[in-house]
Length: 249
Length: 111
Image (cartoon, each protein chain N blue to C red):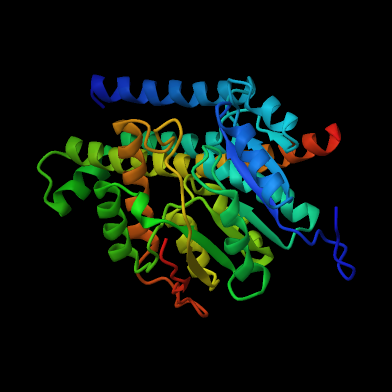
């Protein structure tokens, strides 16, 4: 591992991939990252019932296995904890279902690594269905968040952001979108977006929105957080959320 | 006191004894038991001095003291449930952090 001379911390970003029953795609995703970027990959296995963990390990990823299901956000947090203890300065999170391209990692990571932004979100608003766009617009209006894509799992975090996301209150969140973004805003971190290209999900369905019941639970919880924490939260330090690059895909 | 009041008083005393037994057999921890005992003692006091409930309900314009008692009981039970959920949230938070730390530690040990 290449390390910074001054701090002794890894110079390259760490890629965190939360995965639950992603045996069909995990090997390709890990291999893609390792061949494209050559960065270290840690897969957080969220108590999969298939051989996701073995396949990830065989592909060269470090695997953290959760003893029981914690959900995607808490699995990501586990990876962040690992990164924090390992001294990584920048971490990137991406989905295990093959939606995110390894080629996007560099551009998502760059602003965080250069200190331009604390959090960078790789966005592709075109991927969303009409219903999801409507939900995003609703939550944006409710919370004052100006981000185009509030659910994207392709994100780069610097060390300050990782510290915030390992706080006790972050452990109460279930999803990485509105609650996490409001917490980052509350702590005055700078969040920005970068447009990236994304693939269509290979297995065709989202884990978070796997059923109507799951959608209802998500909407109820997110609505509650948006109402309770959205309005009246302290003004951000330099929270602009302006897209850094607005590339045409 | 009427037969119904004696019955309610007996139930409250039985409830207090049950709480103590739960603590004694390690099924309920002391802080939670203290809440329930406090509630039970309050119920016993209201039963013994039931005239107070009558005066309170008259002052507040409630036609039957029993309604007043039920309303007070409902409020207290709701508060207790809310406190339980707050405690549950804290426990959940600690459990998540603990599980995450153990998982990271396990990964380190496997290396």
